[in-house]
Structure formats: C-alpha cells, structure tokens
Amino acid sequence: MTSHDTSLQHTIAALAWPGIVIGCRRIVAGDENGLTPEEASSIHAKVPAARRASGAVRILARELLVGMGLAPCPLPKSTSGAPSFPPGLTGSFAHDADFAVAALAKRNAVVGLGIDIEPAGPLPPDLLDVVATARERLLLGREPQLGRLLFVAKEAVYKAVNPLDGAFLEYHDIDVDFAAGRAQVRNGRTLGLRAAAGAHAIAVAVVAV
Ligand SMILES: CC(C)(COP(=O)(O)OP(=O)(O)OC[C@H]1O[C@@H](n2cnc3c(N)ncnc32)[C@H](O)[C@@H]1OP(=O)(O)O)[C@@H](O)C(=O)NCCC(=O)NCCS
Image 1 (tube, rainbow, N blue to C red):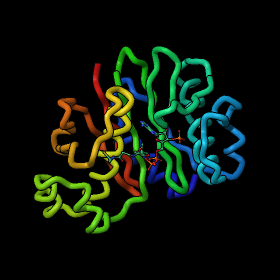
Image 2: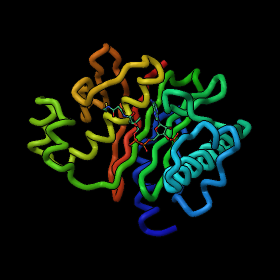
Image 3: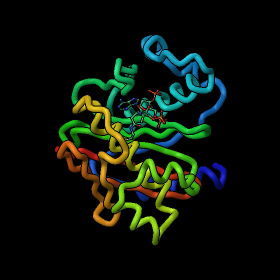
Image 4: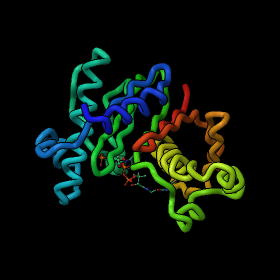
C-alpha cells in the first residue's frame, strides 16, 4: 500500500456509518475486464479510462458484497445512469482518475445512498459560485478548504436522491450543514452526511429508513 492509499483509507474510516459498507480500489490497467457481459453492454462510454473505472468499481463492489456475506452478482447501469442492485440492497459508485469508491447497504438499514470522490484541493472561485448557496458561502469565507467537500457532498446527495425521486437537482437545491452532518434538499428530503478529505475528498449521503 502506498502512502497515498493510506491517506484514502483514513479518509474512508472517517466516513464510517452504521449499516453501510464503504471501500476503495486503485484503478489499474485491465479493470475493464472485470465488467460482466451484462454490465459491459449497459455501459455506453467508449473511452477506455471510463470503462476501466466502471470495471474497477464493480470489482470493488463484488468484494464488498462477499464481505457482507452476499453472493457477488452483476451490477449493471440503469437507464438513468445509476447502478442497479439486487432486491434488498442499495448502493452508490464514484471514481476519479486514480481511485474507485463504492458504498453498499441493506435496504432494511438505508433507503438511499450516494458517494462521491474528487482529488482534494480548493474549488476554483467560479465553480464555488455555482456550488455554494449564500449561507454556505458565509461558512466557506471562514473555512475556504471546505469548497471541495461541499462539491462532493452535493454530488453524493444527488446520487442518493435521484434514483428515489427521479428529479434533476441543481447545486443550490441542496443545503449542506457539515456541523450537523446533514443535507436538506429543496424537495423536502433530509439526508445524513459524512465528508472527509486527505489526498482525496469523499462524501457519503444517506437517506435513512
Ligand atoms: C450522477 C453524476 C453526479 C455523476 O458524477 P460524475 O462526476 O460524472 O461521475 P462519478 O465518478 O462521481 O460517478 C459515476 C457514477 O455515478 C453513478 N451514477 C450515474 N448516474 C447516476 C444517477 N442518476 N443516480 C445515482 N448514481 C448515478 C454511476 O454508478 C457512475 O458509475 P458507473 O458509470 O461506473 O456506473 C453526474 O453524472 C450527473 O448526472 N450530474 C447531473 C446532476 C448534477 O450534477 N447536479 C448538480 C449536483 S446536485
């Protein structure tokens, strides 16, 4: 394990949430071959790096399934883009250029789940304007390094909520309160939220039962 990987492990440990299994995998050449035929035909991306990342996250997810005492199975993309899971299970995937992350949970523990990962680092000022609400900008004024965490938090919320509600959300439709560990969506949903950063910023958003 490289020191980079150790940093990611620490970040993931900081996201621990009862009933949710979270894992990471470094994306390596050949991971695209980890896609099952059903998954391969559900993923329309032609770019090799994108197919490799989708393979990596599904290799990881099957390892997590085995760790949960469940049988590994195909996890194809649905028409919305979200991954599909067998009955009784929910989850979420994300990848950046180097790492894939997955979060899985049994549906008796969690209704909806979202995860996102990005290399850590400040958010460009023009993107910050797009992502942060006025209240969040006040908070970020005091802690500017929170910009990247805010970005991954809102992407994680979208991934948790979109499969449940089918709604497209803008960044300003989501209000994040890191101190309370909560995100509020304009459509009325409240989600639990964990976010942490080392070399990478990762967030997990949870719609509780
Ligand atoms: C879903 C979305 C946020 C993914 O972000 P991304 O930076 O492209 O990619 P990530 O690596 O973070 O995540 C990719 C994974 O997201 C998952 N995903 C894709 N669409 C999804 C959806 N509608 N719901 C839940 N998960 C979804 C897939 O599992 C995908 O992995 P796969 O292609 O290997 O199956 C983005 O594609 C999108 O649809 N954005 C529109 C909505 C938005 O961004 N609004 C502003 C934020 S609120």
